[in-house]
Image (cartoon, rainbow, N blue to C red; front, top):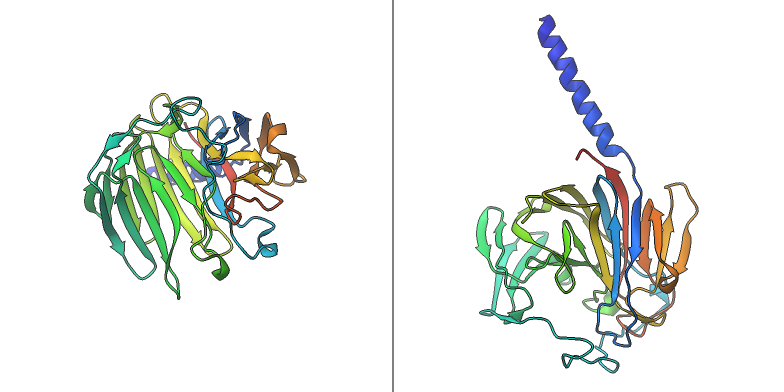
Length: 319
């Protein structure tokens, strides 16, 4: 019995050590690669999040601080300062597809819909499984939360380039609500814009979890923890693959001016107990944070009700 007890004790110690390692809080480094633009329809904001051995984190979409002060949302596109003729703002590559819409899951809490667009900037056709049922070739995976009134979209992810957009459930006066900033998670690379190459996606609905396998052999588990009027929350755990450096996410957004932006300032805490610091986006170069919120303090004339996006809960894990 003695060898068995020793093995059991060793196993228990390994499990405790692993849990402790995963619980170790960490700081992320945020680097600002934003460039100036006059176009309110261009994602000119790029904020890189990186950290040595960061393997777990949380992403939340939160209502902007001023939400209760506005009655009318402004969501119409604004191309007044844009030039999409192939000059200073060159158009993306265009690959053609057969347009399609498929309901992939329709349960008591969620409806999940796959959309194939007639054209997209990436050629990939990523395999998808929803509760074990296979499909492929969708450019958008939409998640609708079943509410008393009607299903409301709260999450959309893009399999072919790895982008995500999330938002809380809108207050009734805002109809379906609106997205603002987006983000990429995983082994991010540059291909005209930041993107992540996803090899396959498995979605489970009880609970709602996205399991991603990346082209470099890495993996990510994205658990949808909450969808409500207060927030939409994702808990992310990553396993790095070949050539995965310290960058684990990029926030993408639009900024023309403080009152014409999907995000215009950065608020952060250097440690969980530190006082919050806040600066306008143009003043940000590099900072280290235990949590960071990309948002707005004054109403924007573009996507007025769009949420702030907060990253936090950074934890280091085994390489």
